Image (cartoon, rainbow, N blue to C red):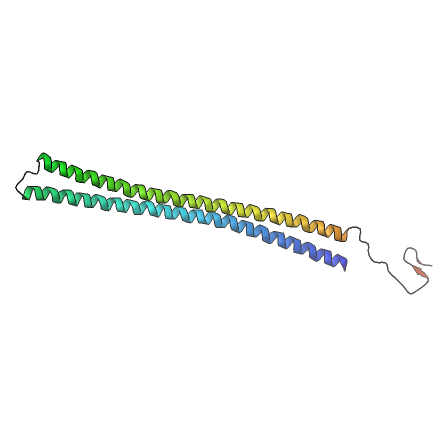
Length: 171
């Protein structure tokens, strides 16, 4: 009976350790997946920033074109230094807005990537903790089994026949 209990205990210990190691691997994979998702979101943020930058460029071109058309339609010269200065200011403001759009997108992407790296590190940390816990549990269970079953001998056999002794058999 004690042998069956020991075998069942060993099987339970092995299954518990395997489960904890599997959970550790799942934590690690979850961290890697979180980092991959964060990287995809960062790429999306960059693309969004590029789209905003192109919209700003189009708006700048339209405003500069309108300013040039209004200057020419008002009877002034389209090549007048004042007109050219206004258009240059419009283009400068447009370039600034384009750069701001890209800066914001790149900053958002950087923050997303940092979050992904942190998620991966957290997953690795949790996986390490689970792995250490699994082996700690294994050692603890092994020590418990050792103290429970060390030096145990099978129970003595009692026979009601007085001519039989366990050490010598029948006389």
